[in-house]
Length: 124
Image (cartoon, rainbow, N blue to C red):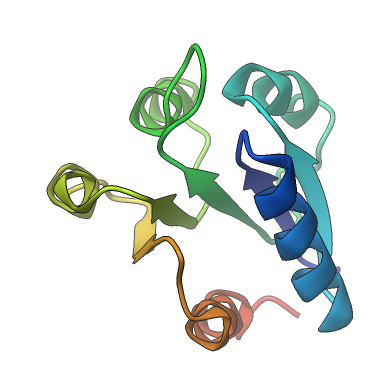
């Protein structure tokens, strides 16, 4: 079963760039501008499928940390790679149990791809 990556970022250009990068290396992505859009679509996904969340912390309405808490409340567990544009957010995310990495924007995409390879190493 092919892994799936959920990209959540309110910036169109970031979502488009990540979708293009991940598609170029063979990953299937599904992108969302808000946490609410993601949560709505999550109900229609296969929880047995290997998946990963690529999450911006600064989102309208429900921010990234609130989304992670909501996922925990729903017993939804998936590896999460956090993206942030703010240094001060690293500390708050480092304690989250599903966060496998945290990148400050702009980040080295080769590092992102290495982390994803590790996340999905045993999945396929």
